[in-house]
Length: 172
Image (cartoon, rainbow, N blue to C red; front, side):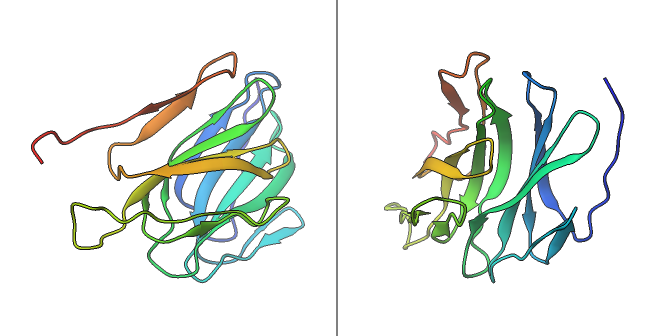
């Protein structure tokens, strides 16, 4: 096990990290609203913000830097609540507070999750989402659901299931 530290050139907010148990690499997801330069890569966020997905080896060398989720208006970008890595190196991000449609620029085909209105409110849109990315930071699939708070999750050790934990308000 080694110790290392990396400095960011811009604010990383709501950062979450996960260890890949197969190779001890580290994945980090965070919200960016200003351009971020990592290694020789500059990630320029969308007008409403973006996610930076960063991958480091066990010694702190950058393996990849990806801008993986965008929103066009602020506020709107969901806040990363947790990140997990399966044994194949796929990355799962669970996020809450989705207030606008989210597009995924790393997808091989155009991909977006459309915000769902809350039927119990006056048109408020507060969703959570789960998105899966491959080891190269490409968006593979995702879905959103109408729960906004108390969302977290993890991937089991053999990578066959995704567990999402929710906090429910039963006094509604």
